Length: 222
Image 1 (cartoon, rainbow, N blue to C red):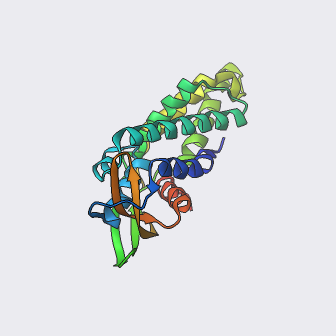
Image 2: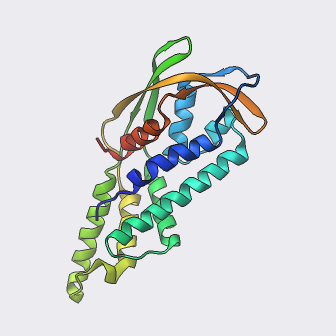
């Protein structure tokens, strides 16, 4: 049972991030540097933590609502993933898996480095540990099948609660990779408005690629 959850949600992530970041022509505050902005994006997408991006001036309620929508999208994707394996799980079970996944991702260490900055452009590198995301689901499936054999049950759909338990256990016990993978992102200075705040920030040139690539770093996908 291999996961497509990140491929299904990467585009959604970028759309949701952009929901509360609208380009604006108003007056602006002090420029938010590229390192701080990419650090905030990493923590939002991987740690599901809104605090860093709120500290940069993004409206707190908009950030929370965006994260809530993001979690809903990911939970729905997890349900679809199980459905593809003929296993029907509840939204609550999907959220439980998502919580364990978040716990696993929060173990990851990462580093944000500005490689180059000139005028309105900047290049920023993110180096991040990862978790073997797809292997967690595969090992959970294999473990469930082994546990079912004494009862002569071979279909995962007949033991969905056990599958969910094993997936959660897999995330709970997973260890980060021993090394970090790296990816460089191009950013451009823009004015944005969120709530009552107007900021001048370094924003990713390709937001969709940014969301997808940051996730790929965290799940060990090439």
